[in-house]
Amino acid sequence: MSEAIANEEERGGLELPEIPLFPLRSVLFPEGILPLRIFEPRYVDMIRWCMRNQVNFGVVLLRTGSDVADKDADAMPDVFRVGTEAKIVDFNQADNGLLGIVAQGGRKFSIKESYLQKDGLLKATVEFAKDEPLGELTSVHDPLVAVLQDLMQHPLIQQLNPPIRLNEARSVSYRLADLLPIEPEIKQTLLQMNGAKERLTELERLVTKFGQ
Image (cartoon, rainbow, N blue to C red):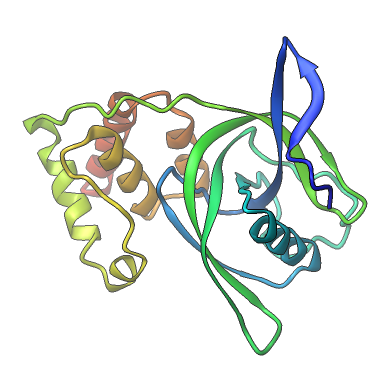
């Protein structure tokens, strides 16, 4: 794998970073916690390269297919164009050859150009989004905060221990979108929204629908 993480071509006077991508049927949100068990050689190599060079990779949602190896490794994966940077915060090597990692979500990004390496690894030049404002919560959001607090009591969620700030609209909107049992495509829509206010409005609609 190339040691370079920045694309040498200039676009509009700016160099866009180039990162390896991990297509999954899961959506990673900023500050979200994502445990992975990795067995495909291309992704094992990618993770080892990222750890060795202290760089991050990107998680993008697969439109079709599954997380397991595709029989046609030379085919370009069909992925959504908005994803999330992933930082490796823990790892372990199992006796059966599986590589276990825990990744935490960083910045959102949009894919500008992508290509497959000879080993089937997807790489892309990306543009990172600006951080959303923290936003403020009001009494209108109390029911959503209560739902999130209930979700945080689940043993599996407590084991992951994702960071949560119950007084910040951005944090509440991301964690609720992350933890609600909804389809990946709905999570992707929530990820692609530009602010906590819009995301919370849609989450309120979804939670109300669950209660019907």
